[in-house]
Image (cartoon, rainbow, N blue to C red; front, side):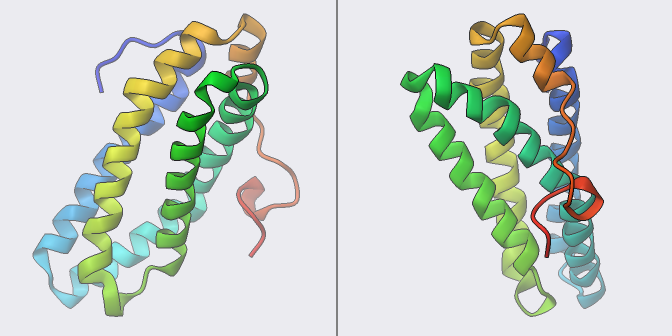
Length: 156
């Protein structure tokens, strides 16, 4: 995604680029359709969720959604929509299994792509226009909450 971002948003934007590439890889594995490819897709989605996605979702929820809800209520519906998609991505990633991978892998990839585009085109430009320098710095310097696996996500 070639959007120019302020320096505080660069990391999130890079993670979005990586998410789009990941969605493409998952789609390729699903299209192959072999049991080996589907199993690899399931493994990759589960690892991606544990190692990257959950932390990314928390980052956005804690440093972006919370300030928008608190200080810019006129954009509440955007946070609700994107937050609902966060929940769907979590549910799909943690429930991914080989028996339903032929259906679930392309669905996960599609939702991840559409969600990422919405954040890049709607959310991040809004944040750059509304947030104070201190709020932008909080986004840049996010630290996951303690007490979660790898510092990420709810404890399982």
